[in-house]
Image 1 (cartoon, helix red, strand yellow):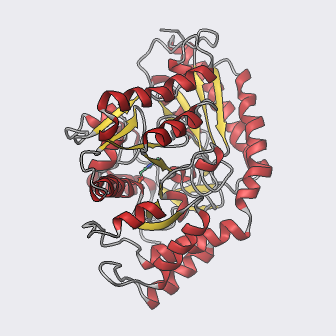
Image 2 (cartoon, rainbow, N blue to C red; image 1 turned 90 degrees about the vertical axis):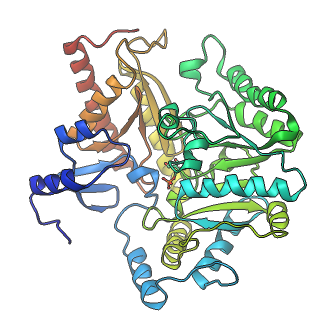
Image 3 (cartoon, rainbow, N blue to C red; image 1 turned 60 degrees about the horizontal axis):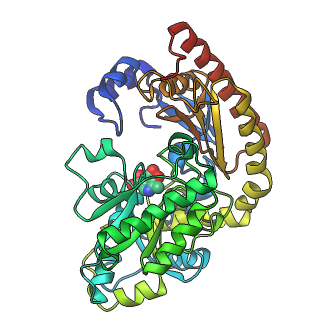
Length: 462
Ligand code: PLP
């Protein structure tokens, strides 16, 4: 379809002439040329040179049910013919939006029964900022407007999403964060844990929230936001002690707890939501990605009965043209039907995640791998020249990760690097045989990376 028949070089030239890529270094792109993906099925991508690539990232952590499900295409075409668009502003609705809202209320735990739609995770988090501040204002506490987040968190790339996120390199571009966002440290034991045992470190990091609340003033704090497992920050699986202590603190100070389930939601961690895996009882959840398995752009903020009740007392002057878009909502519903009827969360829990865990932790015998972490179907390894010292490389952070990522690319497996951590988040439908292929290619890439580091003299600790 489209220009898929053109030769790779021609597609690359057109791309270079006109297409600005997200999160991309222009020089590097010009040197290497963009890799052109033509089609996909299951966990496999096909590029314009005919390579068959195993997608260890499910696109951008989103294609939970795998590629090429005709049912979603059929639903989209049917919905486009019947009602391609109508909005949900003021007093209108339509079946796809209301049915999806009802379904999400059923799937979400506790009394998270009310859904505000967006087009992705970033703008859902923008919604959360405005929603939670409006909520406190309606309750007569407008001074409760500070939202506490964590360094290295990723909550999106809009002004609001970037502000809530804790990526300093992103804050630096565009004069962010907006006022009223504060940060505590992340629970990354490998890098920051020092001699402290992981469980103790988890408690210490959680208690930074309490300290920050008291520093700001408990009557000024509106909410805390966190990903159950920090994803784009490097798949940082927190110590078991971490979330229960965060929950205790939010309860004690009456602070709204927002879990950003954009990656962790819809089976990724082995339950429907990461909050369930980690025993969190959020007041608001952010959802996107796996909500439609990436087949359509859609996101949601799902809020508790109490928050919805308070909000209903005012005009909430907020919304997007595509809030509850009928085609996106219909596709999301079909995706959820497949997740449920094919018991894909059960496949993760009983088959895929235990097998991946065994294979992933098997990488610990590799000379470069210092730490292997996994939560369901998201996993990371820390690369190090010295495991015992948990030492970073002497090179700038990310140099080694990039070498490894490029080796993966060459070996037809998609893995990402975050600094010198390698991460995966494959489609949930991946089979044990495909996991074997993924791990074999990952190991081969690690071997080649090590050989290159030794040849280049880069395999040294800082
Ligand atoms: N929140 C989290 C936890 C994410 O991982 C992402 C995207 O990776 C977002 C929000 C932003 O979502 P989107 O890119 O759909 O705007």
